[in-house]
Image (cartoon, rainbow, N blue to C red; front, side, top):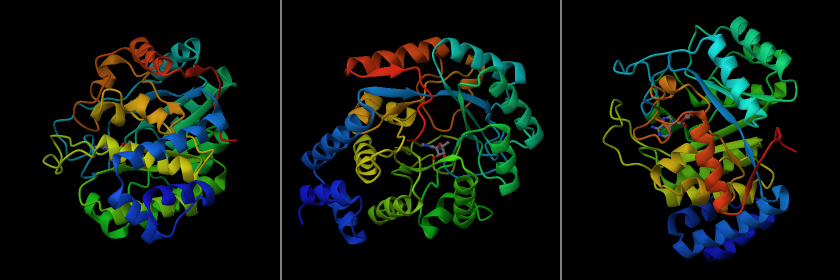
Amino acid sequence: MDNMTRIDCLAKDGTLPKGELIELLSSYSEADRIYAAERARKISLSVFGRKIYTRGLIEISNYCRNDCYYCGIRRSNTKAVRYRLSLDEIYYCCDWGYGAGFRTFVLQGGEDSFFTDDLLVEIISRIKEKYSDCAITLSLGEKERASYQRLFVAGADRYLLRHETANETHYCKLHPSFLTLANRKRCLYDLKEIGFQTGCGLMVGSPFQTREHLAEDLLFMKEFGPHMVGIGPFIPHSETPFRDYQAGSAEDSLFMVSLVRLMHPRVLLPATTALGTVRSDGREQGILAGANVVMPNLSPLDARKNYLLYDNKIGTADDASESLATVKAKIESIGYEMVVERGDYK
Ligand code: 5AD
């Protein structure tokens, strides 16, 4: 089989045998990547038209009990300037975001025990009370099933938890031993069973990642059936053990975005900030390769400059209206439009 045939098969059947995926990922050319992007873009156009869903990202805390080797807010990074937003600051972000047309708020943060289930329930209930027409997405890491259940009952609609890599051995090379792929997957299956629209995903080009690992990621996602998938390049952070590793490439990331779209026609797929960081037109290219979601940052200025998962993150000096204006201009420059909608998985 040649690569174009492999891409056609993926579009037709939604999957390929592992050996074929490895071959495709190992040998694809620029022409193959463009072909995959065209097919993926046609699928997103047929499902979503030229509408791009927007999520207002609120980075509520950069305290984290975890110690992932790739992440700039890992607990061992003593140089990180730690902060957490007050409840009033969080509500202010939502107020501003609602006025600006956001109908989904993403509360993202490190695994910070200050934000107990009780406190999160209070925050979720309050936002839902005021903005009953908005969706709340949480991105707060691994928790017990009972905690996820309480947050869902309080009104949270979606949960993002990237699986990071579906390969056990690779997972161990990215994380300290107290973190396991088995628990990560347990969280994902719990979230989905509870009723969250659930997102998984991965970094492309993370240290020690092989083409076989990427194939395993695609097959795991096929089996799991996510509602959302987050894909961006790995980017080194200077205060982590992976400081000297190379960033993942924009091209590999874009190719993965297209393959995910071919395999999951209706999935909610963001053009990520990391993609926009490794390539100035990364987010536009992401949309043209099959993405249909953007996540402008609503966090207060002094918070966002400290929410640094990797070096050179874009937008850390912009305020919320600048972040929104930048993203809006990019989307419109390629003939797409941002819409005032929750943008649920259908
Ligand atoms: N480069 C790119 N993405 C990163 N993330 C964490 N650290 C990095 C990095 N150095 C991603 C992880 C995590 C998400 C919130 O951010 O995939 O799940």
